[in-house]
Length: 596
Image (tube, rainbow, N blue to C red; front, top):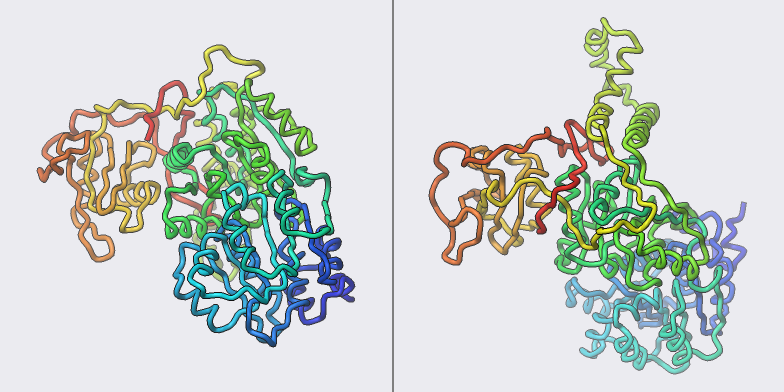
């Protein structure tokens, strides 16, 4: 049976390649745009949400139209972020794997410019680039765009939001007047409209759905809570969705880091993505997220632009964005390629007006949802576990040798007893954690609710001892990384650790006074990459001293501190990459956690 892409005018060697990638039927934007772009005679404006297949919509026509016998730049694709640049480049290479002499070069910041220059010098037909690095290469006179036939502006609205207007103008000024410009965007703000008027002549316009509307496959929900309950409500929503694989959006870098650290301490597989991370740290976080070893990615709007990860189930707006159009970009990270997804907003009652504004812009009604009760969460987790057990793949060959011993162990138990005990392994911890859990829903504006309250933390500064450790950012540690390393080394529970300050070649970690001896014992013979790891008490035991740190050994007792009550929650993970619960948890309500 012929692949429907053949009927759009795509030749067989390309169709065969995309068929192997799982392309069975064109998406609406592909079906409508490919025949127009294949003529090569029109400027083009395509409006469609992220995740609808825009890369193939312009990538397949480019592969049909260019002359790959020639090794000079014939097409330039500009996009806002490194991640999107790499994604487009890899997609074009995959589409053209059955073709010969196709050269695509990715040009972006954060990587070796000399390597990119060498690739360009060897010959290239398609350049995929972020504006900043592309302009750098142009200023070095290392590339000639005088014969470029097609320029693609992908995610044009995001590029303008990130301040690339002037860079785009300078880059396009080096290209021929008679080139064809193809512009793709999720929204059509006035700035994008100005670009289309400036660089295009009577463009063919294609809008999938109404302008600036949201993806029809996304369900939009909002929860109203008090400011002091926001974090507890957020965790309850996450626990109510056991298989969640989501992106959590915050307004600031500080909020992003705080929430990620709080989640890590509470045993969730989470990490942050924000502008203060180095490119190496950013790559490390994204690698873990794409491999699904992270359950939740906590990100700012700028840091998350261009992220293209499949099968994101939920987008959670921990804070609503400042610009309504950013909500469209956020929610578009889920329900990609025709799949469904959920966009959740956690708000206070004063933000209802913002929800109504977003509804008018995206053309979809939000559902007012209720924060689940403790009983609801326990029930959902229990049956999530049962469903996982029912569908687990059994390795018959490997487990067969252990079956006799397993059967002996269960010999005195009935089938019903085994099921009840097995289910209780995790269910008991949820029952304990959510015992007497309060109702967190708010029906009206609560008097006295204040914006900006942070996460509660038990214990005062006097309950903690500040330790120096000779590991820092040069060793590849962020705060979350160091927390995990420290807990694995010492056996301490993440949520009992206090403030963590990561410096260049050293760091400071606050531990409960009662656990200082345990920490010292754990690091007596510890090594990291062949180097001895040492910890010492900071000079004043609580604040970084300008004169350095104390070399005194820890002496005697437990420092007069009190061990935190309430049990432990394990940071161990199960085979699926999500968290296991082996101890008591609590909501952390009422008391204020120190800001980090």
